[in-house]
Length: 205
Length: 221
Image 1: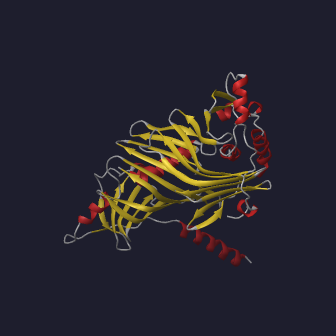
Image 2 (image 1 turned 90 degrees about the vertical axis):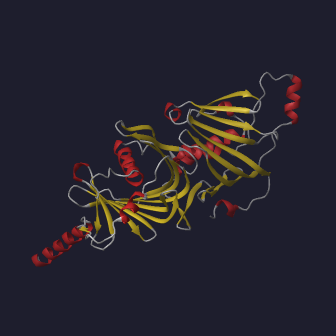
C-alpha cells in the first residue's frame, strides 16, 4: 500500500503533456509553440484539501515540494502536521514530527521503488498512454483523467484528475477521487522551474 | 538451584501481578461532603453535534506504530470516524449507530480486520460518548480524588475522574475489575459546557497493548 501512496505522491509534481483532442495542423503548430519545457527541477507550494461527507469543512494541509530529475524528491507538509518524505538515489525516507522532534517512520517498502521510478520515467517522457497502472483519457486539453486498471486499486481510487496550467508542462491541481464522498485536492502555487538544488535537500531532514 | 528458580518464578509472577491494574475501592462521601463535583463528569463528554480532527500517534506493544489523522463526528446517536494518512488517503471509515451497530464503509489493509473496527469504535465511544448514568455512584478513590463510577454491560465498570490536573481521566475495567483502558486528557479548554482536551493519551492494556497519543487539530460544534 505504501507503494501506492508513494506513487500517488509522486504523480503530483510531474510535468504533464496532454494532446489536444482533434488537433488540426494549425493547432499542432500552436501546441508546438507551447511544447513542454525540459524539466530539470521544480519547487512549489501546495495546499491540500481533504473532502469527506462527514466534514463540515475540508481539512486543509499546506506544504512545499521540490523535485529534481531524474529521481529526487522532497515532499514536506508544514501544517497541520510537520512531515517530510525524502527520495534520493533510490532511497526513500519519511519523517514525522513527534513531541517536537522529527523522527523517522520505519517500514517504507524500498523494493517497490523500482516500479515507482519506472512510472515516473514514463510520465516525464509524456508517455501517459503507455501507463501500465492507469487508463488515461483527455476530456479536454487542460484535463487528464487517470483510471486504475487494477481492480484492487480501483476499489481504493476511482479516478485521478490532473489539471494542467497555462504554462505548458506543469500541473495546476490534482484531485484524487476515492469515491463519491471522499476526495483529496492539491493546488500548486509559486512554482519555480529549473533552479539548481543542492542534493542535501533530498537527504537531510 | 531449585530455590533460585522458584525465586525467579516468584519475581515473574509478581511482575505480572503488578501489570494488572485492579479497580480501586470507591469510598462513599459522607453526608456533609459536596457532591456537586459529580457535575464535572458530565463536562468530560461533548454535548450536541461535534466534529474533531486529531493527529494520532499509535504505538503497539511490539514497537510498531505510525501517525495518522483521525476525524470523529458526533451527530445525535450516530458516531462516524475516519482514519487517513497525512497525505489524505482514507484508510478506514466507519459509523456506529445505537441499535444498528457498526457499519464499516472503507477499510484498507491492515485496518480491514473486524476486530480493528470494533476496537477502534470502542475506543472512540469510550472517549466521546457518556455512559448511561442512571446508576452512577460518586465517591473518592484510594488516592482521594473524586470519581464517578458507572456500571456497564457484562459487569464492566467505567470510572471518570473529573478533576485530574487541568483536565480529566477515564478508566475502564473488565468484569474481573482489572483496568483494560485508560484515557488521560491534558490541557483542557472549555467550549460551551464541555472540557475539550488539547491532548489525549489512550492506553490499552492486556496482551495486545497499545498507546494512542492524540493531538487536537480542530474542534467544531
